[in-house]
Image (spheres, rainbow, N blue to C red):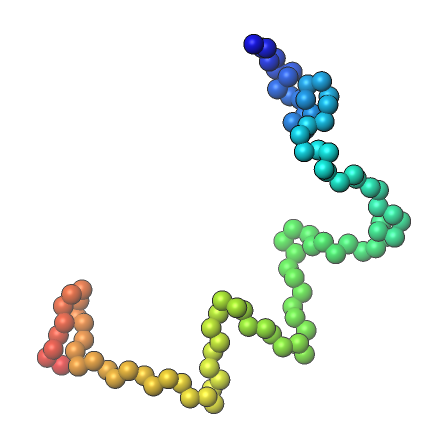
Length: 98
């Protein structure tokens, strides 16, 4: 059994102690240097904490798929249920004497 030293624990996890590439590194994309156009183009990345821009006022806002659509004020809503003939006065207590 081989004894590992402190130095062995501090090797790069992607290389073995004999400096051969680790498993899976053969599929990693080769790094390329950006060209001059990429270096001079303004960054589109946001700074940490930077707020996104507000939508343009002429663009309609799309409803969020998780939120139900609110009825339009001119559209009729579903009829409301009639009020019950009793009311709760406490947990498990119903008062019929109203």
